[in-house]
Length: 472
Image (cartoon, rainbow, N blue to C red; front, side):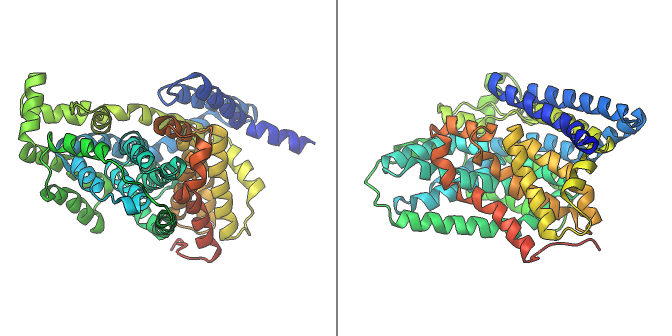
């Protein structure tokens, strides 16, 4: 009886956190900008009081928070750089060029496959499934309606491609967060994810291809696409020369250059490319803001882009908030790491994982519990970031005890945490995409094939012991 009482006390901070996060989703329009951070800190304080009552030294809790935050410092630096890099890549025309050439891939006979590929390209270039959905996704929904294709199918193709890009892009917050909380590094994390991610997206594309071949599209106008293309072409210089910049980044990644150094080079080159290839656009901004070219580029890095393309969707896609736009994400990471530090130093996570996992647990059991935990936190906390941070913190030491490299953990929480958020109708990700695309969650969830396949793929690799990297 006493043991059961201890278990209830142990999970109290998590239960309180879940309740507060649930109310945040109900009562706040954007729970990421303050409410979720407060909920995490209150839950951390409650956990700290319970731990002190259990005779855990206060200094020990402080060191737990310090160690937890220290593990995420690299990711926070990367997040700040990414804010500036994304803005300069937009100003330089690199992101618009990727979108422009991606949109031109559309073929009515292969609409669903093209939709998935286009959204993957846009999401890879921006690092954001949300931005992809709100911009090119809206246009593709319109095209799908003109082609009389099931809108749930179209939304499923959009989100499958968007989450593939979000998961694999070095510009994505989740792609940086997962290795940070797991103890791996960004470059190895992305490389290791390719083993499970590429089979998943290939199967997804095959499914959409087979479905698409059985759909008889009706002749339809592609005016929406032309509006997008014209808006880009009339405001930016678009040419293959711009792809030299992402090629340089790919070569740096291939040569194992550190993530921070690679992204800083990408940021600086983005500013240089903007000065060389977009003088007319920068000139317009200079006139409107009464600045010179150098000031415009610096302002873009820190404050973000402010480009008027006379197209609301394109403005939404190409106007980013730069370095300062990452502040709320940084605060969320700090709050989550504080909560995670208290839960670890107070012995809460060890008690929970001890209930789940024994020393003799196999790889498949360990990875299954990790995958299940990610899904549980997506369901219970309604937040994608927490479904990455909390399991990452819970299982980090357990993977080390089982002689597994941290990349196994970071890959599993991306395969199961990042992508499954959209499969939970009340999760903030699912709610956002449903509202943006104008499609009910239950209509698109069955067709988010990539998101459904990904966690099963990581379990399949674990079951057959494929690419399970052990500590040397």
